[in-house]
Image (cartoon, rainbow, N blue to C red; front, side, top):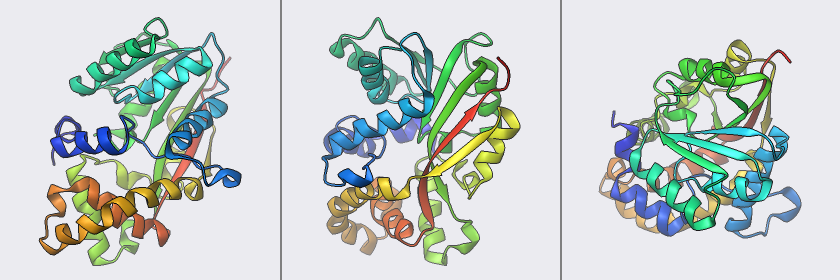
Length: 277
């Protein structure tokens, strides 16, 4: 399996994130009553869901675990005035996050460090809140990551995860399983199979505290459909030539769209609170 650094530093991934996602590395959130908003507005709405579920306050110290290029951190820090520390294992994206914060004039509200969220370089009880956005699928050891989140989270602090959910792989067709394996391998997502049904909720309760899961698959579907519409024509050639492993993001856009329409893949907000006061 390729490493997560290799994936995020690949030319194809960076071209897609730059030209298609404008630096964002996550799906948008389309409120039910505002399904005709732009993708940019949907990205900000996605961040608002994080902030609302965290109950963000200006004095909060927040950890963005797997911060990527700092797209989420920069927007939330600018609009909610909390201090966000982002950590990511890929040096290139950390440098981009620092550049984004400097350009936005929020270096006083953000800190970005290169490191592994499975071995966080922070003291116990350092953060009031933690959030993750489509990153925990990359964790080589999801339980170790959650244990570290619990360690650095203050008693009573919250963790919000905007992550995938999926049906059991045994319910996939042979072709769907083949495409799924290509994505897991190509994006270095060894923990993706752990997000079956309520499995992640149970892990949160085991390592942190009481947890809830809210299915927002319908709200992220327009964002996935947008990517599908952009990729479906070139993907015909990719599929005909059996080159899915070389164009993983296009494979996600098309194959995961079809799987999502069948209910095999989805998207959820997971919220948990550490015990104690």
